[in-house]
Length: 295
Ligand SMILES: [Zn+2]
Image (cartoon, rainbow, N blue to C red; front, side, top):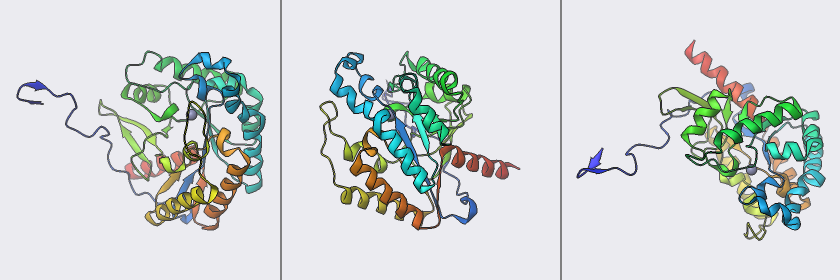
């Protein structure tokens, strides 16, 4: 395609050409779903852009809070509420904090892939393959885990990565921002890709509760955040869709944030018809419905 013979810098087509999300019913008569998930970046959240920051010990301590306090307190909360979640963990966090990761596993939560050094997956980046393969190696070697789910570090992705994740046998991704129901990716070569469990920035706690020199922003009170979280869930439930949390133990493991999360989880549970589930459960449900469709 061209205009007056000039090459087209942006293809005249949607960037995501996947078919619309099918309206499969949620299991057990539920009206909606909540994918309860955490991103365990630890210090790699801060070293991803500049490894030299490893020497900046107070900056590192934001990430270090996860292993010392944040993850144990979140695990305690999930035990109390009787909920299972997915923890997307960077390979670096697995290597540096194996006891923290073993505790997550011991409590029966799902562990997903979140890169190795938390490098943002950009098109053409030569580190794409190493980030995926090294992350897989750490999860397998240290924890005996072969993940089925992947969340892109810093919320970016590209075609090379979509193809690579499919080749490595991943079942689902949870990174795209373009739907309120799961759907199946369509790769540029016309073949099906992973199942997508879409995300919304509404449930990214980093935006409301973390302020630091390299990540400066205002902090929001619990009432403000709870109001946003409740409204998004209530309307999504009316639509029969799903919400996905993107919570970080260095944020939601802080005392006031944890209290807020407890209140929100109870609000969600009190509907009685919101399926609070791991990514693996939601993706498996989608795959089963899809199979039924084809049968
Ligand atoms: Zn992350």
